[in-house]
Length: 303
Image (tube, rainbow, N blue to C red; front, top):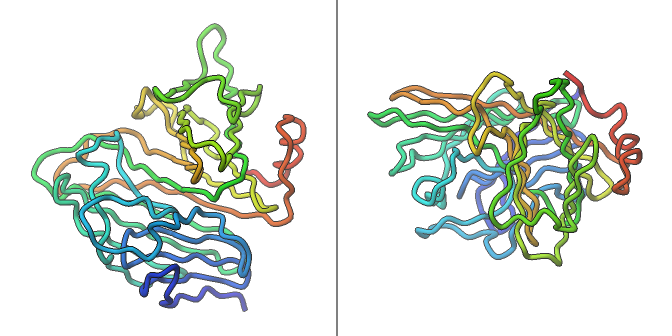
């Protein structure tokens, strides 16, 4: 009978991590720092997540570190609240088919971060409930910001919104000041936006879009990683109204989803759910849209 196992292990220089696995897939979550889902991949195969070598195994200190993997933030981004260090041990507890992590409340923002991470017993599917709680005495305007830093060398595919709106626009594209529209890693196609992670290119690139389709994909290692979330067409989102953002430099490519922007009152919480899936034996397609369509066929869930 298929089952999920949870056990403490050491990994990447950290003495205390938690492994969640079934017969085909495993996740490793740091609890000495972070937390980060520092690994997600097929058992014994490549890690689909980025590991930043210079920070692996490092703990303590007063400056924020990237580490790699999947993390929970809150948007809009600012130096004061976004980059509060998370270099200390994390509380965690086992739940059905996974774990719940609780990070110490951030001193400045008074926001408490939690993640419930569960794995399907017999599939590659992962469900993550991201939860932010305002423990302060004032309302805080925020959006739950879920960020997956992916390993180098892959191609990201983000669907273009195709909703028919007549004479009105049907999507938003937000560009950051350092993003060059003619960057050779970036391509706008009729149905997709594609971004190639090139370890030789240090220049960062970031864009956001109103991704009404609620999914994005990353081809790498002969695998296909897909993440799903819910876009609410009637909601207000940060960064000019985008629910999906992506950032790339020479170290990684980040796949980022956002919940609607809201005013979170004292002692209140908000949740944001992502689901992941990983497919084996999927060659990386060319930038041709037909090749991308064929690679995605029968693998993307349409809601």
